[in-house]
Length: 259
Length: 296
Image: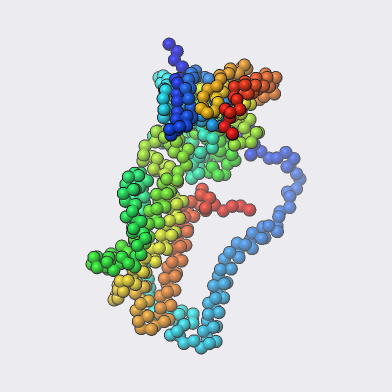
């Protein structure tokens, strides 16, 4: 029986007594999926992601993650990338990436090769000894991604990671994320409020609405995956963006958006 | 799984198109000279004003024929420092020991209690009132009692100075340990860090800037505490600090000697300030905003 990798079943999250952040959210995520949670601010997409990561308890419902099989074992099954780079300012780039392994009891020398590989994959080999403050915003985000990848997780959760970056840097990082997830067979859940970003990155888009935060619609992106820069200028990309925008407009009434 | 994919080097590292030219652009010599001037002025200005003030004082005392038992001229104070030097230095050493030990105890106690407070809300709620009472009650008011209960004068003085220096360390340690970035906290939760790992790799480094700021304050306060306590104790005899020498000299109307002792106390304070500032620079210099020099 092929069990889905992540199954959310009627998940509900309340903050305090009256605020329903997520209501009745059911979703299955298969291995290798690249899923976007797309919606306006206040629709509970970040809350849903944090619940999957186990950083927030659910109020009701269940979230099941299929346990790793033999050979898939990693120090940490989930990688998480925050909206901010969230690096330790007192530690060099190497030590920041080493952190997840260090917390799992892997010493500096044993971790070296893997840390170096993770940094190589995001193109920051030369910056091992730099401090975060010496890096640009895009480079800090790459360090953050390398740190999430260093434990070789099966699942990568990303919470609007590129929202604060400029357009050029964001496109580059989008390409990197697609390439990394394809190479490593990762399952990615990506929170964003950008239609263009979600269409470019994902094979499925979960459109969410606010008050209460809920799944409004699930869309398939009709284009082969993984994608490269040429997809950005293709007719398919333009068509899919138009379609998702139209669906979004239709689903989200004016009062669904938390102004 | 091994991949040796290459990503174009981050765009920040590229040279801008068209930057290749035959000759290097002329240096902004004006700006470089201004920076050099500023570096020199940073030393010269304070030293010059200090020298000027001392010279003015000297001139004013001589010009008005003010007797040295009212206000001694700086030259007179220097002379006293020279002649009374050995005995004054002995007292200064006593004050140094007192200040240093009280600061050390304040750091140990403040950090340990602060860590305990940060770990447990209930411990904090039950013990914090005591810490506040200790802080708000003037040390001059408690000192006589302490001197009655504690037989050893040095220990009694130590306790007085400790009370003054302890609180800033405690309160800043508590705030510092709580100041860690909440996303980083989540990250440590995600990676199932043990409480010890969390303290060592996240909370302690986050608290360090706050602790160093407290150390600067507490260093000065420890000296004040040591001096004030000795005034209250009114200790006399062989084994006494600078404060006792000041009292002693005032009884005998030896104003130049009072000034000489005062100069030593000030120098001690300046030394403590410089040491704690240096320590802060060494510990935080490579990462914390407060100690990083901005290039202009």
